[in-house]
Length: 351
Image 1 (tube, rainbow, N blue to C red):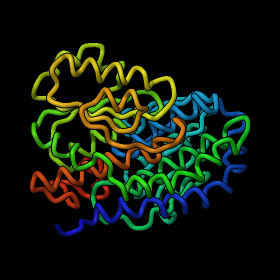
Image 2: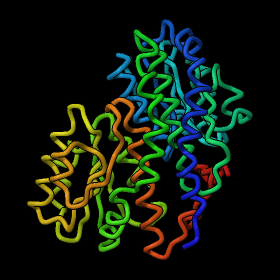
Image 3: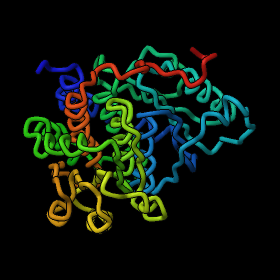
Image 4: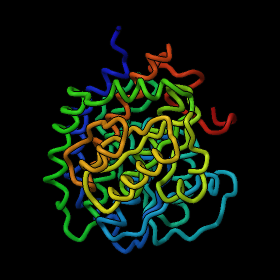
């Protein structure tokens, strides 16, 4: 089987993450100074970048004690709402830095008093040039349409941002230094990946769930299954799944559950795996978690040996590998999903 560009770029992530972490950590004092006197951080993003922002929001609130939120770009681009953002830092996230509505929203925020930070893989992009401070990721050029290394390096930027705004910057350093080696191990060993892809190929019905710090990972896994494997997939938090949608689970559904190896969400995700089995799910596939979680699912896919706060930087990698493998089984090209391009403009008039 010919190696795909997506597979090569998944394998490039250890080096991309190491470069990004090393290049962004020196910017922590500037981030800290920029946020002085600001009470809230708002993220502006779409697609995979929005999933990275979801991680950033949780990490800011849990680790840094800073309120965070996800802004709706249409509030700026279509409603031109007159908001007072003088107490906000607005973080605009775009792999290319050229998505029209993200650039427009950043300009709108700045005009309303926000300080602005751009997270992008292109330091020469319009988004980076217009921001007060640019966090330029070091993924290198990404050729496959599905975001892999550009996504994980965005997660690294979120970790550096949250660390910079915490009361004790540097608190995540030791764990961040371990991330590249953990990603390398997951890529090389692929424990459970091919069996998980086989289970997912057995039925077109799937759902993905996670919670808390790992919720963004669940959303990203669902997005990758949809865009790369053309499967209609719902990405739901454990809590939202419990509040009604779990009723649809039957023998046609494979459930993909993601969990860090520690933290307050593991036991709930383990209980969810047992519940889905009782409801007759075709299979439960678990990425990460602890030994009880692995025992509760039908297919256990190894996750990173990292604490919950930084686990998402590596936890998504097995999901990427599963998606690439599943695409092959379905006769699809994972490098060029149908109807998609690297730079997505939300509205036709912006293309």
